[in-house]
Amino acid sequence: MNLKLPKPYITFLAICLVAGPFIWLVLTEDGKRRSDLFLLHLLGHQPFNLAVANLRPEVEEQALLAQFSRVDFVCDDQPSGLGDRRCVAPIGSFNGIPARSAQLHWDDDQLKAVRVDYRRRWHEALLEELQGRHGQPRRDSVGSGIVLAWRLRDGMLLVPETPAEEETPALMWVAGQD
Image 1: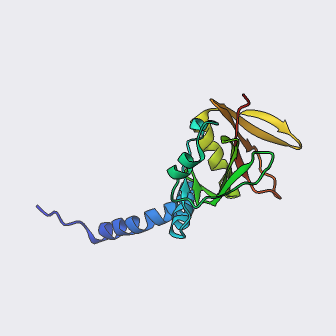
Image 2: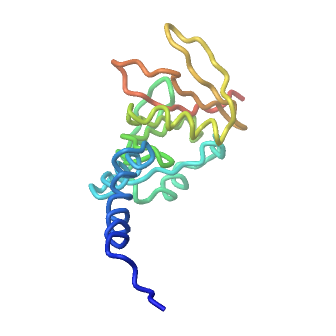
Image 3: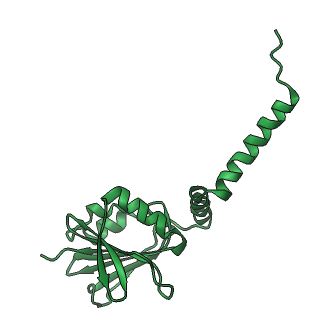
């Protein structure tokens, strides 16, 4: 019994083994996103994988920052409309979506808001991830645009339907009013 494979078949299999992953990385959206995530990781940008559905005002600053000890948060007392203390850090991704930075806002030791600036190119992927996790959003008119809003247990998750060109696209969690 001859178990030897024909040479053209072996050549075809070798080409598929080399070209298949390359084609997936370069030509598919999922491959491009994973390539971006890999490069951001290589460049030292840390992931910020935050379960926004579990956020609540009672989350302590030290506990949250300890959970993300590899992310270099810089905190300072900076009064704003979102609170009296802010922590900011550059990040590489947010829940598997390439991102730029994260901001955490506290007021009287209560978590009031989380803002994540993400990369515009991955807006649709972020919306798909959020809809898969939290269901269909409510659509609210704000100014000249539409904001998608998900009501969570202890707050609201907000994302623009179409990010304005002149602004950095951002996802925002805001604590519910007591």
